[in-house]
Amino acid sequence: MSEGRLRKLIMGDAQADRVVPPSGFTAQLTLFVAGAMAFLAVFALALSLASGRLATRWADELARAATLRINAPAEQRLAQTEAALTILQQTPGVASARALSDAEQAALLAPWFGSSLVLDGLPVPQLIEVIEDDPGYDGTGLRLRLQAEVPGAVLDDHTRWRAPLVDAARALRRLGTVAILLIAGATAAMITLAANAALAANAQVIEVLRLVGALDSYIAHAFIRRFTLRALGGAAAGMALGMIGVWLMPAASNEGGFLTGLGFQGWTWGLPLLIPPLGALVAFVATSRAAKKRLGDLA
Amino acid sequence: MIELENVGYNYGGGELLSDVSVKLAPGSFHFLTGPSGAGKTTLLKLCYGALTPTSGRVRAMNMDVRGLDRDQMAHLRRRVGVVHQDCRFLDHLSVIENIALPLTVAGKDLSQEDANLRELLTWVGLSQRADALPPELSGGERQRAALARSVILSPDVIIADEPTGNVDWDMSQRLLQLLVELNRMGKTILVATHDMSLIRAAKKQVQARVLRISAKQLHQAGADL
Image (tube, rainbow over all chains, first blue to last red):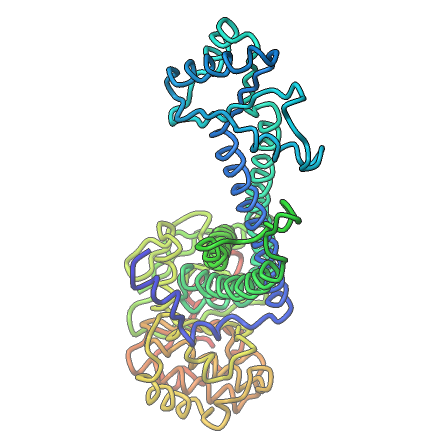
């Protein structure tokens, strides 16, 4: 499409617009469909972004840290801890390793045993916090070496409970993306139906226009412009309502966990602004195809 | 202008026209007559490309109609003014907008053509009815509006299908007068009619040839009308 034709399509031609009779009901339906779909798209987008954020955060934060637990009789504990720390310092991919102090361990246990607990009398294992480097260490290799040299050491890199959570968050994000694609597809289908109905209802008008020498492109543009603008307007309204809805959701909090994080953060508030132009694009393509097919079918 | 060579047309239920050859020379005035259902409208449609012949060849403006794509066909329509039997207006547009429709769809700037439009409306006697909607017009007014629309792009050929079918004698005389004036301006005219008195009236003013369809063939009618 040349620049001139594109400009004409956007700016419009008041005379050309009058040529196709206004169709109130189809117009309202198209507006409603575009609006409802944009509204749903905003939520699908919010869900997708939030679960994406969650997956990244869980994967990142938890993957960076691991815990080495040393279960050994009290007299061997110190020696084994020293040996484990030496091994960890020699392992490539370990950024730092630090034995937790008694006070820190007591703080970790405080929720269960209260703060007045004295650890000395209990066989509490020693914990070593391991911070991974980028790239990380070889978990299997490290385990084998620890097994040989520090029999009481157990390495826990949190994979066991981290993986299903990250998987769930990623699956949610995939669902959000699929929902957005389905919304786009459903919008295209409904606008195609509406455009076909409008073209069929205006068969007489199209015939008269052909008789007086109108090119197919002129007739098609009259319809395409109308449906594209309706989709743009409807989607803009639906997007605005959807964004207000997301904005009214409670802010992310630790108590609410995952659900309250459902929304946009920072620059992602700009993403829903793409919905109306994309909706208009979908309408443009759908109507173009419908008009081309219809006009081509005419004798 | 328009040339039919051994043209045949078949609707699927037997042949309607066969072996029709005729040549409309520039500036000529032709009447096409014959009984109802003989194929007058079909022959006109073949002339302006609304139908393609099942055999033979139609040339319009030196182009083979069969070889034209849809856009070329649209451009041909702008050079051939057609007055349809049932007028074919857009009922949601006013008379003046309907008359200007060929200008609109050709992308012409209507504000520059306003004087021409008004003049044309006066010529067909519809200046008082410019803002009326087509369903509000009488039969004669509709035919005159259709004639005005067919000549707005100043075509070389004007084809009219029963332009006086639904109007009284005075009005048909008026329409004939407009067609005669157009012919005097050098336009090629082809009018389908079964109104013999109209043809007789025309013959007093212009050199009109009469073509008659009978038994699927086109004949040059003699001077016996």
